Each structure stands twice: as structure tokens, then as C-alpha cells.
Amino acid sequence: MSNQRFIALDGIHNFRDFGGWSTKGGGVVKTGLLFRSGHLSRSSADDLERIGALGITALADLRQPSEREREPNALPDTPPATIFETAHGGHMEAPHLAFLRQGNLSVESVQAYMRSAYERIPMEPHHQHIFTQVFAQLRKGEPVLIHCAAGKDRTGILAALILTALGVDHDQVVNDYMLTNTAVDIDALLPSIAKRISAQTGQDVAPEALRPMLGVETMFLETAFEVMGPLDAYIETVLGVSDADRQALRDTLILAP
Picture 1 (cartoon, rainbow, N blue to C red):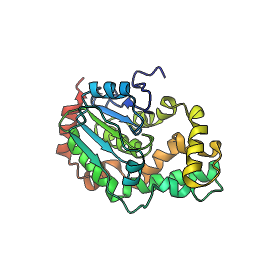
Picture 2: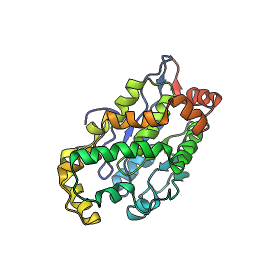
Picture 3: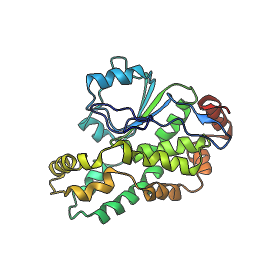
Picture 4: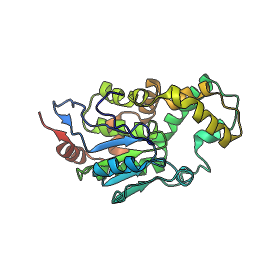
């Protein structure tokens, strides 16, 4: 992991700065303000010190309550002043765990599930609500961390919307999303995660079947884009981010050419 966007931590996967991308207007998204990661429940003392030094003032936890209860975040001594959390959303447990309990998993069935998840996530009211809250927070120009469980799916969709709203072109938005496959050593994680999932679901889960669930594929994000329709319209009509709001975001988060 030599990419300067990545912040290597002991117990947190996929922690990175998703600023630094160029915009269509010739500017560059500021670094040091937009962070994304997996959950923080296994943070080491050194991790918490490093996170604290980033000056993060707001944290958006996209996990549902059952996930937060099972793996509560560890936070720095001075935690973010603002924490956004999703409502229940109607799921008794995380949908991916409910799917995995069905058994008879294959790479193909897991890929199909992931595509269905990307169709569902951006259309669920509890996700839309927290997306809207994060967009409002970003106008303050203070460091924000967004995360879910692995920091790639729910987080990836929100990060893609933020970069799109800032005027980053589609290819770079996808590039940011795909960095999960570089930031995370999927081969090293597969055996331990398969063992944990097997214990949680009561199913004998083959590590290789989980590969599409641990990494990201371009078609997953493109599926979310398709279900959202024109992203400018989704950002404005669904999330309530007006043209004036977007200009305020750009004024705050973009270094002019």
C-alpha cells in the first residue's frame, strides 16, 4: 500500500483520504477533509491517536443498529463532536448476514446479492437521510469521516455522490471506489472472515465465495448509478442538495486552479 491516500492503521481497514481528485473545472478537491474507512471497533491505541490528530469533527456511521451493537466503534479521547447514525431501516439484522445464512454460496450468487444490495442501498430512506445530513455537514469545511462495516459499499456510494457533487468526473469517481481492492489485502482476510461469518450464520462458508463481498467491482457501483438515475437529479431531488448548496460545497472543498 504505497498510495499516499491510504492511512495504514493497526485495527481499521480501508482508511483513506478521498480528496485530491481533480474536478471538471480545473480545481482539486482538498485533502485532509474527506475521510472514509471501515468500522472502528478494533482500533488500537495508536490508531485512536492518529485519528484524533486528523481533527475529525463529524463521523457518519452508515451501519445499522445491530451492527453497531455487535461491534461498537472505539473513538479518540476527544471524539467527533457530531455523530450521524442510521435508523433501523426495517432489517432485523444486517442484510448481508441474512443472505449468508441461506447457505449454498458461490461467487456467482454472492455477486448477484451484491448487485441487489447496490440497487437497494441508495433507495432506502434511512440511507438517504444520513446522506443528506452528511452533505449539509460538509459545507462547514471541517474534517469528516464516513464509514460502514468494510468502508466500501454504503461508504462507497456516499463517497461517489460527494465527489460527483464536487464535479469530479465519472472515471475518477470509479477509481476512488476501486481503491478498496488496493487498500485491503483481501487474500489475507478471506480465511478469518469466512470463519467469523460461519460462526455468525451457522453455515459453512467457503472463503473464496466471499471474495465479491470483501472487494469491489465496477459493476456494483454502476448498478447503484443506474438505480439512482441521473446523479445530478438524485442529489438535488432525493437528497435536497440545491445548486446553491453544491456551489457552497465547491467553494469550501475545492482548491481553485
